[in-house]
Length: 278
Ligand code: NAD
Image 1 (cartoon, rainbow, N blue to C red):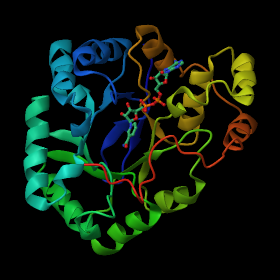
Image 2 (image 1 turned 90 degrees about the vertical axis):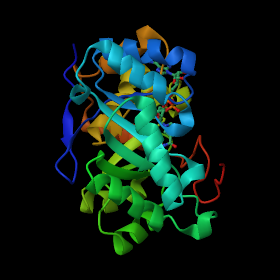
Image 3 (image 1 turned 90 degrees about the horizontal axis):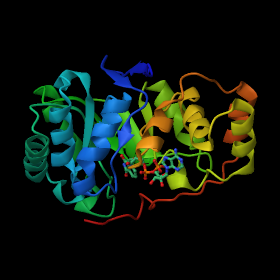
Image 4 (image 1 turned 60 degrees about the vertical axis):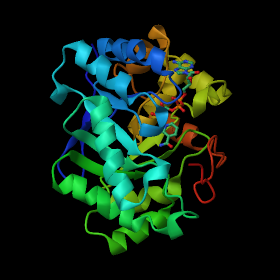
């Protein structure tokens, strides 16, 4: 079984660098997928209220026989619950759905700068309450632009432990890495495989042949060697195993650089400045 390295967040908590993402896994398929991931050795699950499968994630963990403390679980605040009282209610509902009395990490899912009078600061202050009362061990943000992150840094008490953004070889996000490194904010790369779209790239293919690994394994290894946390998604047991089997090889510095040079600043997901879905 793979030994997944932990990294230490800026508040001292540990997080496994490789996890399992459950976006777009139907509720009826989630128990099987998360069970396969736990069986393969994953100990970190990334879900969200808006994925509609928190209950099934909790069920798979309960059925696994693992102690709650052995699995790092992240959930995220729904876009329709940014006002403080709604956020308090939504957080309680996430815990209830998962069947937990605490989360390892809770994130603001989207900044929604065109909604709520652009006030993601009071939403963040509400997450600080959950952190202070111990019901989530860490808090962070997802899809914030660097200036949103800087505003929180200027106006709030607690610096996010985690910054979850879209990153893949075609979207390397160099511009935010300096700020995160300076403030010890861990970067989580969502859609680390670019939803499959980077896997046919010839540069990645030739590195995979050299390493005798698959393109997906090479891309995941690239993220880890850059220091990012990843949680690829799959419902296929063989791929779930393949995506965790990345700790027996390494990429050279030149290979990491060659993959980073594929950057096209090309998003697969929405633009956080304008995304406003509720
Ligand atoms: P991903 O980059 O993990 O790609 C998943 C797809 O790649 C799968 O559906 C499958 O088609 C393919 N795939 C997976 N393993 C493969 C393999 N070994 N070989 C070939 N193809 C393979 O994309 P994702 O699911 O969008 O992202 C992963 C996780 O990131 C999500 O499940 C979720 O937890 C998180 N996420 C967060 C946000 C956010 O707004 N915070 C947005 C999107 C995703």
